[in-house]
Length: 164
Image (tube, rainbow, N blue to C red; front, top):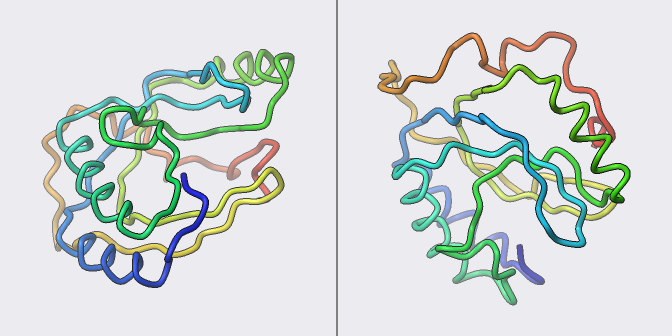
């Protein structure tokens, strides 16, 4: 997302922000490929007003601590997604899409924390994460199907980056 990040200062402000955000659900109804040289295959997210508002607030905080932020993460340009694989060749992209088409979509998850990860071609590391507002009961006013909840998946995750 950027070339340099003041993670300590960002973590402090993001922790305060996260404490006011109620956990929410995301639905992933599609498979996608970014038309860039980065070879990215992803699950597309159903865009909601809540998600866009959350991103806008997050970005306003993030940009205070980030240098040379990548343009495609900025407000109005960001495409909400969950990266499944990156750094793929054209042939590997085709193979990944073939495998992903076997997923019974949509899948959904409950977001309980937000954070920042450091990503390189060989690793992915959580720099920090913050829990969202804790509540005794989370009201669900969405239409996401509970049978597609990723927390119910058995046998973990398989794939090129599963060990990272």
